[in-house]
Amino acid sequence: MQDLVNKAYGWQGMDHRAVAGVMKKAAAGQNITVAALGGSITEGFHSSCPEKSYAGIMRKWWEDKFPNITVQYVNAGIGATDSYLGLHRARRDVLQFQPDFIIVDFTVNDQAEEFYGKSYERLIRTLLGTESNPAVVLLFMTMEDGTNAQEFHSKVGEKYKLPMISYGNVVLAEIEAGKYQWKDISPDDIHPNDRGHAIAGELVCTYLDRIYDTYIKNQKECTVKQEKLGADCIDPQEEEGKILDAAGMIPTSEGGWEKADLHPHLHDGWLGSSRTGSLEFELEFANLGMTYFKSIDGTFGKAEIYIDGKCRAVLDGNFPGGWGDYGQSDEVYTSHERKKHHVEIKVAETDEEVKFGVLALLVS
Image (cartoon, rainbow, N blue to C red; front, top):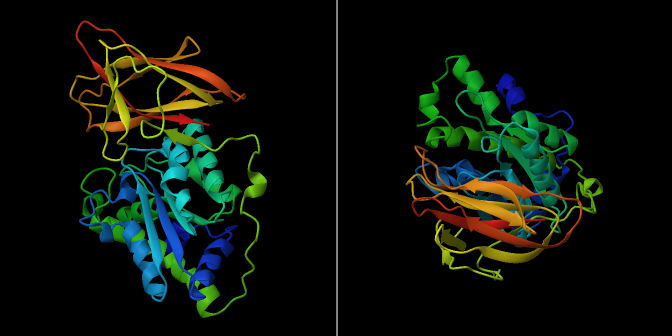
């Protein structure tokens, strides 16, 4: 058991005071808010019900340990999304609820490359620097072949001394030891079934039990920092990411584009085609990204993204032979200066009419 604990948790250098502080708040009779932010695994994909997902198991731990308070629960998992989109939707989907505790899981959605390492760190800094001063715990899931971004994400965890829990380290070691096979914990190469979610949930709860036994049950003194954890590491010039969509933004020119609900979570987008004009905006930003609709049905095509009259990116909404429709998030423009820009989105002309769906603009 101790060997598995060593594989699951990077205890050296962790700062557990923030998590202990949430427990002390709950033990004192104050209501708390716990949240989970991530992709499809966090959303609960392939669990038989929300309660059997790792996030649902985590929620139940808080409710069972502190039955005399109200535990508000926020599940901000969206399938096929990465930390880049997570950074921009953090305020809308999590931070507006003033969470006390957040578990973050983007390790199988982020790629093991520098761009995602930077977006993940910006996300973590955004969470740590928010008003409610939440405790943040990092969860590292894995694909069947061991592919994930744990190497990059764990460097962020070490930098900010955050608790880290590796599902991948545990299940891959147990499979190698012959305890079970991957097919016993997942019906595909990524998503846990109920048994896999139970393992992930148990790892999270085992960590929480350790903190509870140390600081609550055994009443170990815990002096929690009063300032925002990680605030000294936040770049004051770095703007918090925002997600903008048709619910709160009016184009300067619609060019025949229509508002469209294309995605199960990102409902307020726009739909245009190669027969319509340009969708245009006047926006202030230093950096711009876009979440757009990727479809397997062959009717979606490419769009050209112009910033101040210059084409900065060509995005392809066609996903032939793919596993399904989803929202892809790409960076379009970066700079060190925040100013007003003219943004134009134009569907590329083809012999046959094709469509393009904009789900949201990502600005900072």
